[in-house]
Length: 306
Image (cartoon, rainbow, N blue to C red):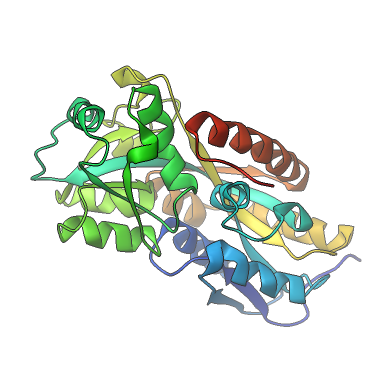
């Protein structure tokens, strides 16, 4: 018989509460418990924001080989490593699943003078510093890249953008609604509820193709004449030094979560796409994304390090 949990589990979440990473981690926690996949034990969420995710990774590092600890695996961490703001090597850890394909959105308040993506691009072409753009949790991570990449293709000098980082995309949205910033770049779970309520207007999706449900009416950058897209992924990370039995347990459990009605409904409602990739594909993605992000940083003139 392979490895199974023998005590309560710790889910170390590398961001502050309120954003998509936290939402999905807590959704995974609930599904693991509700589907009785963890031997009746409790999954204890533990938010460890700070240092671009380093604090959460350090918890996994201190619990090397202990599969009772799981963490958040996200494209933003890979970008953070390349940017040099995350002082860790993601290749030291074990990505066991990718659960969500995330769509990054550009949004403004409903009463913003920016009525369309064309208005945004035109204003930033004339003066790249003229708008405050909220991202989270740091410059150089996925929500920053998701707007900087297409803006560069559209002819904007992205090195001069006024980019304002917040601890979470939830905080970014509060700042937008409060009039402290002009534009938000964030993933679906943060933007979609505010759009449905009529408080914000979604100008563009960075996905390669138009979404479904609440995103069916949001045109992609490509549809609006800007040949660029940016997709990020969200999943689960294991501590260094776990063995094949421990990987197998988590891969099997998380696959069952991904197939559950509860999980699919959560992700669909958020405006993102539920999916599943196991250990082998997640590991390959990590390696490939590190290389591709280095190339993207070079193209954007952001500088990169590994």
